Length: 431
Image (cartoon, rainbow, N blue to C red):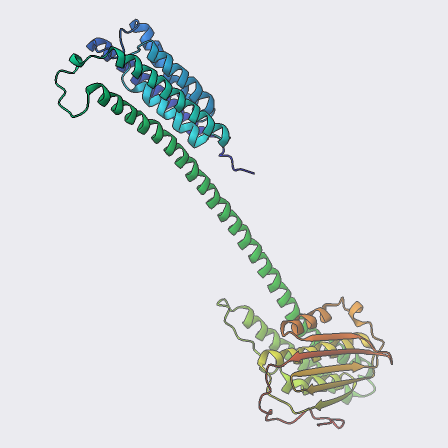
C-alpha cells in the first residue's frame, strides 16, 4: 500500500491561518498602492472595492491549504484567472498565493495520482491562458511601443520569450519543490519506522537475553544446590535413624552433611561471582568442577549409601574447560536424580575417550521415571549443556530396569594424554 502523508498537526493548521491572513493583507496593500500609483498593466481596473475583494478571495483559501490541498489549488486557480480577467491590480500577492497552493498539493496531497494530475492540469490551463493573453496582446503591440529597444531580438518576441521562461520557472519550481517536500516527509517516515523497528528488535533481543540469563541462572542453581542438598538430606536421614544405635555412624553422616553444605556454599559463591561480571568477559570457571574431580561426586554418592562402580575407557585426553565442566555437571545431575528419585541400590559411571568424542554414561538399577518426579529441570539443564557443545544426550529407562543417561561431546582434535590417574575404583577398566 502506498504511503500517505498524515494530515497537518494543530500547530501546522494554525500556521496556515497565519500565512493565509498574511497574504490577504499583502494583496490588499498591493491593490491600494497600485491604484494609488495609477499603474494598470492589465488594463482598466475595476472599482477599488471589487479589486480588494478579488485579491482577498485569491489568498484567503490558503488558511486551510494543508487540510484540503486539492480543493484549495482548484479554487485559487479559478479565482486567479477570474481576477486577471477583471484586471485586478494586486502586484505579486496573487501569484504568491497560486505558487503556495501548487506547492502545497505536491507536498501534502495524500492521493499522489490526484495530486499529480491536478497540478499538471492547472499548469496546462495556466499556460493556455498565458498563450491566449500573449496572442491578444501581440496583435495590439506596435513597434513604437518600444522606442528604446536596442537588443538583437524584436521587442514583441523578446517579451513573449521572457514571459514564457518566467512562467515555466514559476510553475516548474512549485511542482519540483512540492514533490521534494513530499519525498523528504516520506523519508522521515521511513527513518522513524526503521528506528521503531530497531527499538522493538532491541527490546526483543534484550528480553531474549534476560530469559536466557534466567535459564542459565536456574540451571546453575539447580546443578549447584540440588546435588549437595540431596546428599545432605540422605545423610541427615541416615543420621536420624542411627543416632541412638550407632553414634559413630551418626557423626560420620553429620560430617558428610557439613562437607556438602560447605561445598554448596563455595559453589554458590563462585556462581554469584560469575553472575556479577558486567563486562561479559568472565571465563568459564571449571576449577574443581571438571572430569578430574568426578571422583568427588562418586565418593559423595557412596557416602549417601549407593554402591558406585566407575570406569574409564580409552586414553584420557585434555578436554576444553567448558566440555570438562559439562561432563562434570552431567555426572553430578545424574547422581542427584539417582539419589533423590530412583530408589536405587547401585549406579555405574563410565567415561569413554573415543577418537573424536568423549562419552559419559551413568546407569542405575532404580525405578526410573525421575524426570517426571523432578519436573524435568535436571534433564533440561543437561540437554542445554550438551546441545551447547553440539553433542547428543540420551536419557530414559533401561530394558533391564533402572535409568540411564548417556551424553556424547564431539572433540575437534585429539590432544595430548592427560597427566593424571583415571578414576579410582576397584572396577576401573583402562583400555
